[in-house]
Image: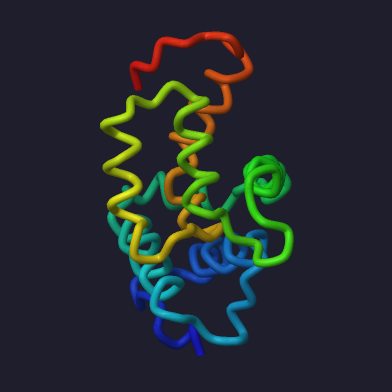
Length: 151
């Protein structure tokens, strides 16, 4: 079970936060974790452990409705781009989004090289790079006809 392998330095509210994030993203921690989920949990738990005590107290008082809203919006952005059957974003679609958002050909090729072996990304990959995808989305919405690609 995933719960037993969590960082022992975390208090219950901090563990609740971790599992709540997983549940909001449609991952069921009761079913265990693959390597990718384990790495995400380990990284998040380490980040939380490194916080100052006053910052950890903010987690105790966290408004999960706000967190759910933000993740809901991220998931909506995801569903616009992913394949409805596999719930994965094909590499070609990822490259189209990068191109439309103003990313240079050089950087698109770097992304293509990085993900070529898997040929797609999943929701967890998408959430890992969400600041980039939000920036791309904003760039497309604000300047839909902009042709300069400088990102």
